[in-house]
Amino acid sequence: MLETTEDILARLIAFPTVSSESNLEMMRWIADLLDPLGANVELFEDASGTKANMFATLGPDIPGGIVLSGHTDVVPVTDQAWSSDPFEMVARDGLLYGRGTCDMKGFIAATLALAGSLSRRTLTRPVHLCFTHDEEVGCMGARALVPELKRRGYAPTMAIIGEPTEMRIIEGHKGCCEYTCRFHGLEGHGSAPERGVNAVGYAVRYVTRLMQLAEALKGRAPLDSRFDPPWTTVSVGRLHGGVAHNVIPGLAELEWEMRPVQAGDAGFVKDALNAFVETELLPEMRRIHPEARIDTQVIGEVAGLEPMSDNAARDLVAHLTGSNACDVVPFGTEAGLFQEMGLSVVVCGPGSIAQAHKPDEFIARTQLAECIGMLEGVARSVSA
Ligand SMILES: [Zn+2]
Image (cartoon, rainbow, N blue to C red; front, side):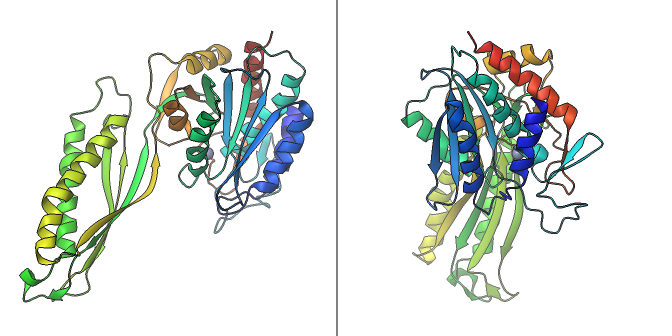
């Protein structure tokens, strides 16, 4: 199966599915590979009609079963010095080079190779291959797909997300939420501050409230949290506003992020901010200028993967890989979205995150072989 996986991987690498580009050609190629194997292939196009998610099922049309999930998009190669064409796979010394080899077409290729072997087995439970678009830019594909699967009555019980973990078992990661706030005040002459609405001043008060909440979050960290740091963090990344010393700034822009360790923390922060804006900042701003406003734009809200004591997916992968060490990682994945859907979820895939997003990205053949071993175990676990 390693040879088949490598052949498929070479084909997948040749589709330059950078997040800004269409992935349809690659999805059609995958569909053509899965159709003859008797898979039920569903494509879900996005509103632009240039991207699609795929959900392909092998085995019986019943609830339950295992989702094997990977994203089809890759990060750009612009301004990176590659030793060879990033979209043509090259093998050197047991390493396979190309954009997306480890993040994460290697895993997708292994699941497609597995599909061939699944089609020859009698399956008692379905195996769902789930391939998404736009993971690298805020998990947009999975965010659209998960509710759609629910609506269509799919009810898998567990999911393995094959992000590069060097086949280590990852049962948790923080979420990642990014926001841009725009404070619209009223410009005026610096000599008469009370006649204007100082957008920078209000932005600073908002930041101060954020910093207070950042402190409060430390006290909310779960006692058994294994994250570093153990609590939900808030960080201000950019604050910009104003033109000169003597002008009251009418506009200020604030970019900030939050990395929740538990779903409740995001709500805690948002509720506190809303209350602060509605009861303090806006009434004051609007006393001077009724049109004053604060707009918050959600740049991305990627749910975290909360470690659970009860996790069938983790237990299965631990059994199959013979490892019982589970870990948490600092990078986000689509796993939290599947967890929200009620699945037990684990992140485990071939290749190292150290090579992801870098020039000369590669995956080791030994990693693909380990992944195939795990996937063959998955196949046995759902076979008659
Ligand atoms: Zn990835």
